[in-house]
Amino acid sequence: MNMKKENKSLYTKAVITIGQLWENPIIKGIILLALALFVYFLPKMATLYFQRIAIMVAFYAIGAYTAVLLTTYRGTNYLVAVILGACLAGAFGALLALSTMRLSGTYVTIVTMAFFYVISSIILNWDSVTKGSVGVLNIPAPNLFGMKLTMKNGGIFYLIMFYAALTILATQLIINSKVGRAIKAVRDDEMAAIMMGINNKKYKIIAYTLAAFFAGLAGTLYGPFMGYINNATFNYDICISALVIVILGGIGTVKGAIIGAIIISPLGELLRGLTTFMKGLPEWMQISQPEQWRFVIYGMIMVIMMRFRPQGILGGQSKLPYKMPKGVERKVMK
Amino acid sequence: MALLEAKGITKKFGGLVAVDKLSFEVKQGEIVSIIGPNGAGKTTVFNMITGIYEIDEGEIVFDNKVISNKSPIYIVEAGISRTFQNIRLFKQMRVIENVMVGTHIKTNYNFFDALFRTKRFRNEERKATQKAIDILESIDLGDYINDYANNLPYGLQRRLEIARAIATGAKLLILDEPAAGMNPQESENLLNFIRSLQAKGYTILIIEHDMNVVMNISDRIYVMDYGKRIANGTPSEIASNPDVIKAYLGDASEILEEDDAV
Ligand SMILES: Nc1ncnc2c1ncn2[C@@H]1O[C@H](COP(=O)(O)OP(=O)(O)O)[C@@H](O)[C@H]1O
Ligand SMILES: [Mg+2]
Image (cartoon, rainbow over all chains, first blue to last red; front, side):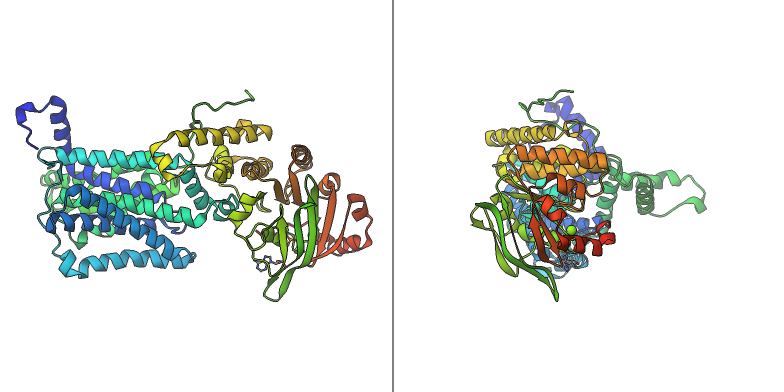
């Protein structure tokens, strides 16, 4: 982007300043948000949140690697790479849905966990393509219609906001439709859903594909944002952050995921800030790598939420009335 | 001409013959009950009709179509919808959403209509919502549309299950022990409600333990024991049938118990 400093509007400047100040937590937050949002779509097939999140991280890695390898080594157009990354992740989602379809309970757990490990080991061991533990370096900045979107010109920040808006909008549109209702019905009671004429298999595949697609889409952002990725990018660390986000915010709500992401994402940065603060303290009170203490906080959040508010801050049942489409009439008025 | 006809249907679970060459029919507009002691095979018959179980022998015909061993979805689309012995609502969805799930097969738009909020989406969604509201109001659940299903009192949950079944556009409603767990007042209300459904043209097949309900509501009754049909007839014929009395007195204590099949 060839934006000259003096041409920047006040608004753009403000956005960029905020962006740079919060760049790390916000961008990670949005990526986690996308992950957390779509955990909601995965039906009971994968009963445990953590396991659902682990497979989301696997889809996320698929999206990230596809986009990064294409743009870095093949010079593929960024937009094309993003679409391919998200679609490939989506395809893996469909595949995973198909392969767990005939299984139940424990076996689903085994297959989904195995999926996470398979993807992780492919990334680590397929050196010639993924560059293993060295990872992919010098990932080019996204180039959209001739504009280079970098951290400096704030472009990447806008791009990320756009992704987040797109993800939230798509989630809302899908949830509030017969597709979303069918997915929820299958999740709540599969047998009863079948008895309503819902094709349970079809909607499980749709749910997995959607979840994987959006996780993959989020993944395509990560590479250009960080500038490099390697196998350690997609580890338990990110699974746990996403888990804490949904448990804190509330599983199954868009607002909950956003609130959770806003609270959890900056934690690492804030704790890192303690390093400077601690310099003034006596030696015995100093902790090396304070940001690692976020895991202690995560643990506490999980225990407290599970004990006092298992549905999360905004999860559970909405108190607002159901939003009727226009033109619907109540014949019997109270 | 019968709307639903079962011709010698059999279901075996390993060595157990749960339903043994059973035949029965339900005519258009009738209320027919299936009664019998616990474990007689009644719920299994419902699972056979709705396509949950494959049947080992015999044939089921609905509306001149063979529906035995067809998929549950085919059977719902043909016009049969059911409720469950143990209530199976979509607990984390609202009352209106539960009923709207029932309208699923009658709502004609696809994923992309939803994503782009096309005109077809808006029309169909409005129609589905209106239908759900009309059904809920007709069944006296109009005040509860915003509530979540698992917060409703028991009697209303049973009613919501029926509302959801109606929403599929079914002609034949099959109700598995709808009065189970209801107090006398609630089952009295249910009785009137089922009668009103008959008046609206629905055909109803019902499994029930509550003899007050069965005797008051049924046009005809089939009695099952050990998977076999042991009697059939009008309520007064059944009440005086010695075989029925024997089957029931032999298991009098069990009849009062709840069982936990699907
Ligand atoms: N899925 C199943 N597998 C094995 N046995 C079953 C199954 N479903 C029902 N049965 C058996 O079939 C018999 C009839 O059960 P059911 O139809 O539930 O009786 P009812 O509804 O008349 O009380 C019982 O002995 C029950 O244990
Ligand atoms: Mg039963």
